[in-house]
Length: 597
Ligand code: GLY
Image (cartoon, rainbow, N blue to C red):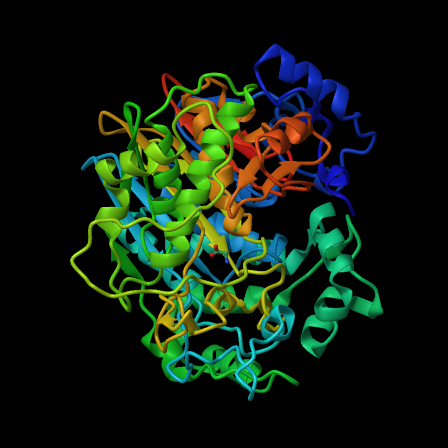
């Protein structure tokens, strides 16, 4: 399955507003006969309409509320909650519960999430950290063999070793307790009904299962669910998940204590510890001790806006913020000018250098969070890329202001994309941005009680030291692995103007930064901004999205001194722009939609 098979033909028309790019886009991508949405034939009228609007490359508009997420069935569940007076937190619970069923490869009860909340009544922003934690029995050499060599990535991922204590159930409950109005159990009912009656397997899920057949069939419970009768679940087939319904029913009745203690917790631990060939160290104590942490949002100024998101243990807000804070020092009004992409690309490389050196769980390692976001520091970093120049030959971490004298080695962790993003605005004016994950597609591949367990611990560095210095993001018991997830809310004069986020591993940061720039700086509508082809630079190589007009930059960027890699860039951006009306954009690279009223 290539990326193009997953793209609706709307990608043709909504890349860029500039005529040159739009024409190039039309030339570059042929329409797809099969839009791949046959599994969604029985959707509500609102969802069908949303699919048609997305197909036409237009944003969905509304006046009161809006929800954007990765699967129409999940969006329908959230829309129903919002239409009945629920808050964005209520809707999130319904959306997440359905996503865990219909998009199990990306997020669910066995994973973790970060949530950014704008509260209309107080005007305040809050962030909740529902990240997975390392078991208390984990050590810094968790992902090394007996000779101290780093494990191969998938040898670490598949099985119990990579499983951290899940945070998503408690995050759902915590957000609902703080900001919800609807009955908790009612919010889980749509997912329970779908799990019992069955849901139509989406094209994306079917392709993902077929594409991961060997790993998914290593464990009996996983194979039984995803390969009934030995064959991968087929697109459009009806899949039931009674175990998931039973798990949700228990959580509906007893709250998440039913998940973090008792028989479900014991089954999770047994599954991890008995994973054939690769057992893990998770314990029932780890589950019983899990807590969601409220943290201060990290905000960075860009033009007249404040771009706010999740601070450590996510690197998202700081790295997105550094990119925007660095290029804030320049004019770059032409997205067709290669020098624009030099500025964005090198700003990103500088930000990623700081990320690799300094960013980790700040509850375990001291972090120069203020210094990294300081406009004076970002201006100093911007001075490295000023002028009509070529790509930076060398990129090194900077020296942000810091009251610690510790020295860190550079991080060597590996991140491959999975994950899902939910954006919601409710009729009370609250806004919610939540990125949710089980890390790799299908996580650890361990399946228990109707859901998959994460492999989030592989977001830690596999090495403990680099050049003799400890690595900030090394494994430690109880620590949370550094993330790239960037749930973001942008404000102007204190009011939210954009809610956005994406899956995509560490490229999330580039996808989100680019879309914010496209919407706020280049004036694209929110659908155009998320659809725009990607050009992403993290560590020097410029990733350019294949099959799009961005490929036209291959030669100019090479001439500027970059190595260029033309490849699929599988974001899943979901955004809501808030102005006189609400305007929603869903990434054409995935199956999501926006519904509003
Ligand atoms: N596992 C994806 C992330 O947290 O960035």
